[in-house]
Structure formats: structure tokens, C-alpha cells
Picture (cartoon, rainbow, N blue to C red):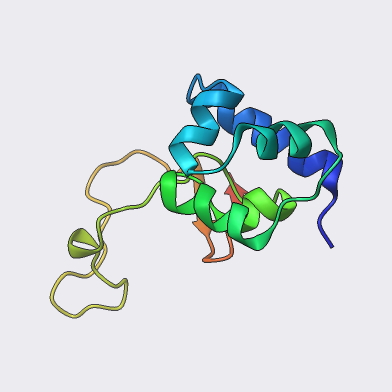
Length: 118
């Protein structure tokens, strides 16, 4: 179940991030201005159609973050063509310099992450 108050806060964060007014945001995602106003005021809950329009208009928004706050905003994606698997025989992972590792962060597909710090 989506917490409506938290959803409204995340939606406002998105609008602030892109410097959008309710009117410009509604135009960008293709809904009526009143739809945004009603969601922001708590009168209406967001529909699936509304959520999908937001996600299709703004690639940096993660579904799980928008719905329940898990993950990060804006999401960042690494280009897949440059990623080699860690167990690849062609290019095993080697640390060439003498610097110590300070932190390792593992990102999961659901938007969550684990932080391991030395």
C-alpha cells in the first residue's frame, strides 16, 4: 500500500528537482492541471496511469522509489556495454595501485543498496 503523504513528498521532490510548477509538470506528463492539484492536496490518490506517465516522461525516476521511497532519486545507470562481469576470464579484476579500499557499495535491481566501509 502506498503511503499517500510520502508519495506527495516524493512527487514534490521530483517537481522541485526539475524546477517544474504544477502546470508545467502536468503538461509534461500529459494530464490535467487539476489532477496534479488533487494529488498534491491529498484529495485523490495517484492512478496507475498517472504513475506510468510520470515514469515515461522522466527517465531518472525509479518506480520503487516513487511508490515506496526505496532506492534513490535520481537513479543513475551505467552503460551496459562497458560492464565486464567480475568472473570474466578475459579481464579479471585487479587493483594496480597501492591505495587501500575505503568503501564498497553494492546496488540491487530493486533500488536498494548495501554499503561496506573499511
